[in-house]
Image (cartoon, rainbow, N blue to C red):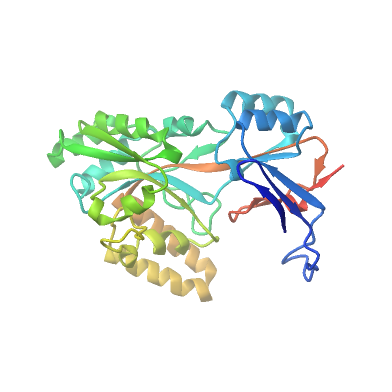
Length: 336
């Protein structure tokens, strides 16, 4: 339970005297009597403190900001047993508004996917230690995931420009909506749009970002999108942000920023949901099909799947990682 909190400085947790382990599988008793989270500073400083034994653990699942690529490369060589990299149930993409020009044309949306240099997107995110390239909606190691990349991970500008030329949209004005938390992707997206001949401006927002781009009255053509699954089910992606019912017009609570609706894919989603309860093995194959069909319709330009990087001091043991959004299980660590 929380014993004390100093905003932007520390959170101190202590054992809850009313907790008693009723099931080790459901909720095991913790090892530490006290957990102190220190807030602030830079990731590199925090990681160096851990390596020197001044702190016990660092995790990008709490900070959102990874250490520098140079430091991570050094750690992989000198302290490999203390560094853990795990996939997150997360996909970062560019959403394309399927109801607004120029992205109301399938050919243009496909062109964006062909033109995307996903290896460069990995470098924008911080390198291969913290991200991997993707062409699809579902993240790796997720139920219903099967590798599928019809566009390729490197840019195919010739094919992309031919599709844009065929669409007659070259030279059109496009405003890219940039989310401050992923602001480094703004220049990446602007360069991508420029490469296809669009005239680009950029609009950056902080906390109000998702409410703004979700509201169809904002007429957001394209912007950043990050989706983190709350639980390991493909429906957590497709029902919430790609079904016809998920698009709520004129609402700041709308999550389907691409305003995507395909009744054929909706029918596939319903079939997969029905199979999920009675035949999970069959459902996985159905979700694979939904994923492929959605990628083919290109409401997104999927770019990367982030990884969680955890760094432990030499005196810490019993490292456990939960892939379902919890990350490192701090209460299961022990310290010599």
